[in-house]
Amino acid sequence: MQGQNHPPGMFKCAYPAPYPQVRVAAPNLLYARLLLEDYAGVVSEVTAINQYLYHYFVLEEVNEEVAELLECISLVEMHHMELLAETIRLLGVDPRYRVIRDSQEIYWNATYVFYGMSLCDRLTADIASEWAAIAAYREHQRIIADPYIKELLERIIMDELHHIKLFNEVLQKYCV
Image (cartoon, rainbow, N blue to C red; front, side, top):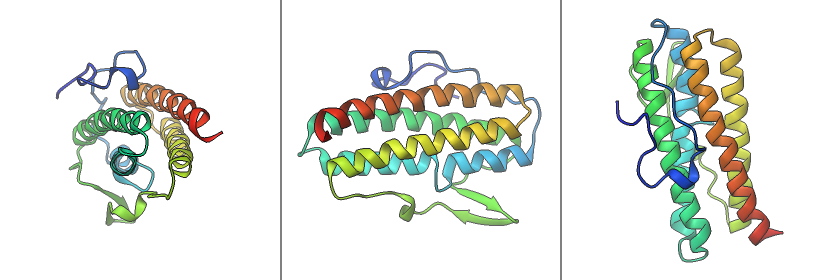
């Protein structure tokens, strides 16, 4: 597994604390299914990455500062995705881009992305996405008893809170 440290280029967009080592107490299919939701569900790292990159692409010529922030935050989300993929694998499940509900696989699709029409509605949606991710991680921390997974989710939450702070700064600067 790459990077218990931050990947190059994401330092300014990640909370300044180390990530825990990726490990699990034991394989657990229930925990893997919960983490698949965080990994590739509607509210997930895959959705966040694609949403932020799309916003970066369309805002690059409109507002370079916001576009660069979106690109930077997407790199942090990619790191979260990598950490979750490795954890899901250790729990005993193939980390495909899907969730498993009632024994049915539901693969990720691009309708989960909020595309938006303006800088301000995109930033507002990005902040809402971060809050939704935090709520999902908190719920999964409540259900999961594995201390290693709880620690990893707590560290990811720290990044998500930092992203809200960064998004709010540019929202205040350009939209209020």
